Image 1 (cartoon, rainbow, N blue to C red):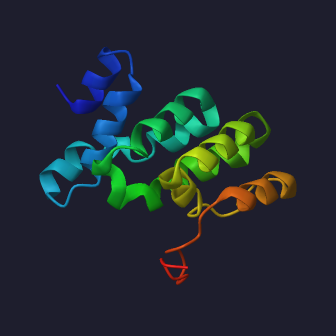
Image 2: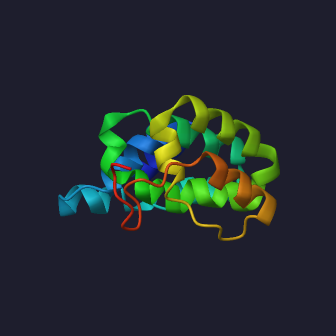
Length: 139
C-alpha cells in the first residue's frame, strides 16, 4: 500500500501528512519519490480547508526537523493561507508572530502574492525578515 493510500485510509490526519511532507523533502531519491504526493497537499489545504492548513503550519514550525524547510512552507502553505483566507487568519498569525520568534521568522519568507494590501501590511508589521533575501541574520 502506498503512503498516500495509508494517509487516506487513516482519515487524512495532519500530523501524518506533515511527516509525509517531510519525507518528500528527503535527499534520498527513493524516500523523496514515495512521499512526492505530499508536496502540494498542504497548499491545497490552504485553499480548500484552511483550518487544517493552519494545523499543518503549527505542527511544522516548532519541530526542529522542519527547520531547514520552513522557507518552503512560508512560500507555499503560509503564503497561500494568507492570500486566500487572510481576514480569517491574520489575527492568529499576528498573535503567533508576537509570541513565537520562529514563527515570526517563518512569516518573513512569505510574499504578498494575492493578499490584500491590508493583510500584507499586517504581516509586515510582525514578521522577522532577518536572514531572508540577503538581509543580515544579525540585525
